[in-house]
Image 1: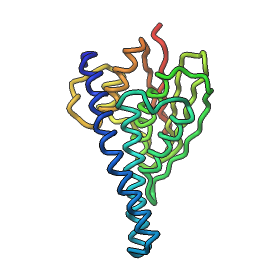
Image 2: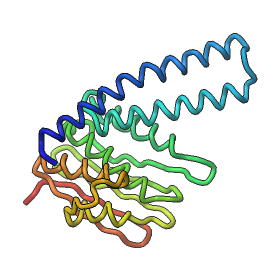
Image 3: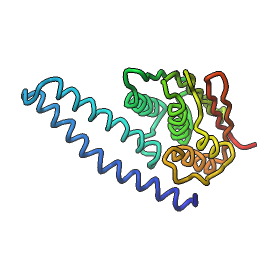
Image 4: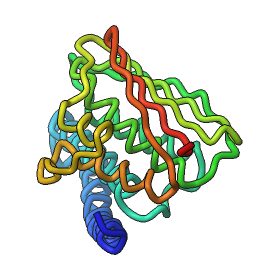
Length: 208
């Protein structure tokens, strides 16, 4: 993807997210007011509020991961955005646990790498599981592990990340991988993958 196209795509996502966030927030506030006024039964209100929160959690994630860097101010904000996104994916059968082994003093560009790699890890866990994020200041390295039953990396995603094959760029499944690939190129970083024993290990670091 040419750099100009990459910058444009981030700006487009930022604009869409900004415009939609205001509407979703208004819906959520309206539901809260309706609840206070007793305008609907509690079960209906709870369902509507939960869905509004789910939508907002996903929108914040898409804005941070695929838009401009504005929301990613520190590791705490990154952690909150990612965990809220994972919560929006959960259901009765699928649950995620996050383990953060990170420092406070990390370069800002690493936060987006964590989100993009994290969502690839989450999508590799069809039954849920644990995602561990390791990033220490000064190490110039990020390690993300996704562990869970039936953990498997999508072949198209692996092709993009491992072989730099962009022939399947039209598939929605590979969008996070393509975005990650471009972000790594911007920083002159590389990626290595390992999949074994229901564990997927994705390591990011400077090119040697």
